[in-house]
Image (cartoon, rainbow, N blue to C red; front, side, top):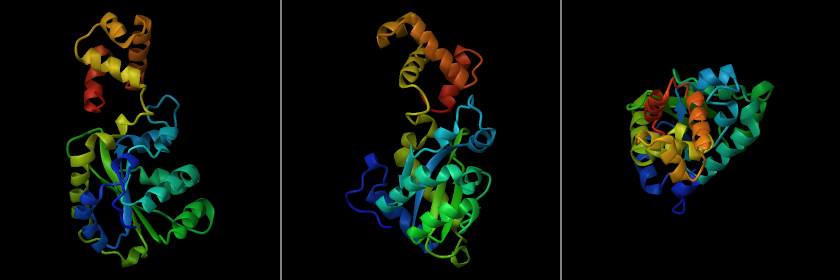
Length: 248
């Protein structure tokens, strides 16, 4: 599961130079690869609530957006998991809990059967979801999905927390905006984001309308939709929340 020189950020594979600073420590712990993504701190709550009014729908959570893989092989595995397995896998919801690490239950029967079959195809015997709090955000955190060809009892996890914090710091230093789950293209209408940025600059609806070439009613619609999605009480509160989530 090693990276190749042709891997690129545009295809969601971590650059070889950055990976070289991360993989030695991760390999020493017994892991052959990983994928990493930003996870909203409210993801587990919204997943369990499963409300159509929630900002984080299950459709959004079942997404490969903002996921960075340690190799093309891992990238392929992650996409197959999301597209073919996640919606029926009992592990998916548990892995969204950012309060503790979680070992995937891989079994040849029951709800974990498909996950077991998929990971086994790649020789993976242990999958560990490991959350790391974001030092500069109260809205989202990072999560490593660590893959090992060994059983969990054979892994050396003594220095896992330290290694994961260092690895996350490296990733956030280079890919912070791309990893922010609230900046994924499918979550918010991009015209609404542009309108909100203009509100933050102090522009009035008529000015926003002219600049975006949409009607004033269209501006009002986009801002009202954003206000509802972010549960904002008013225009000023909407801008404040948007800044907190780093979407403007």
